[in-house]
Image 1 (cartoon, rainbow, N blue to C red):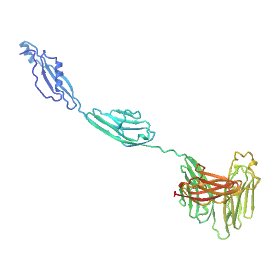
Image 2: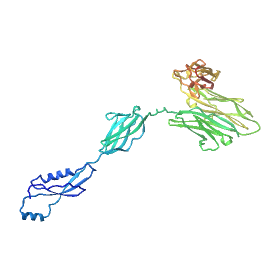
Image 3: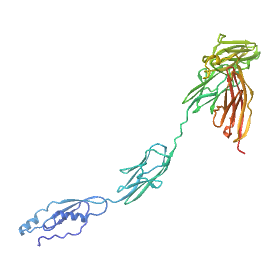
Image 4: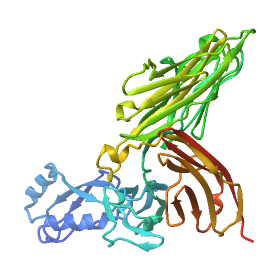
Length: 497
């Protein structure tokens, strides 16, 4: 037998954890080299598994025949184990969660997210409308353990676009897309507390006839309203018809009875505040003989400056002639040094020689006879002196207050769009009344297009170039310490010729 040779190794197939016997002599490579060489020979590119191969090695050395015989009978040396790591196969990218179409308010933070798998883990590229945005400082891109994210810290209108996340590796490419829409936040409305542009007024109703209360309120946002009768809420009263349309509140009862008489109020509420308007309802009994009291001259609302004289007048008829009684805010008024009350036949007059803020309130005169009762009311407002009025003598006047009177009424007008409009009226009164213009129930303010001109007793509203939105109902109201008066007209604006 030749010494120092390598025993031939035959080709063989391996299965997982199979033992392999290899014999080498000691003149050849070290055992470790043979093991390494063997491992390289059995490494493949199949599926990723770890195989453990048992390699048995035997070194042949020159020995005497007797010793050789003994070695043949001696047991084989122990097996050595070698681990073989096979290379994993490539798997194309796949998005297990995709981008979805989204919308966000301008200025808010937004994040797109999706999740991808693949072997090896894919490289990720983000695009906006097909343009890569990896290095754009406006977009923060992250990729951790398959989770892809793109964050916009502060969104703008120009961020509205189609966004795409694309993953690619050696095995393939996959992508997912989503649209982002940026919407502008609506500007906050300037809140305005409720204001009754048309308050409740006294109602005299015959028993068995329809009772109707009506008022008009404005405010931003438009207020909600509640009705009350002597402080009792009427929301759930099935016998009433209550409506509220674009600021107009109406309460109707088809047949009024004695129980419906009393004080009614409408409360308007919005986020900016509350406002209430009140009025009295008088239900006249059905009596055949005689004649119900009625007012041939009603009280009117009054506005005076501090120190001015206030004069209220009313006249009532009935059979028999009714008695007339004055009240302020529900309390009886008696003749005194500050307040003079006179009665002549069926006419009564109340005069306050010098008005003060405490004199403001609701004044009523009640006409009563055996047949029934009628009431006329006046809301009296007392304002402070004007800045140029430095003393009481400048405010007071020896002239007797007279109720405003419209000597020249407004007239209906129709014009073409773009034409100039002028509305004129003449109102007289002592003291000089305060005049307010209204367009469809809303006070008119001066602007570049609208002028309010007051020349003596003449009041004018001028629109330089009429627009279709200027059409509608126009009203001029005048009020002083003796009463009020008003005139109305309609303006029609036609399209350009």
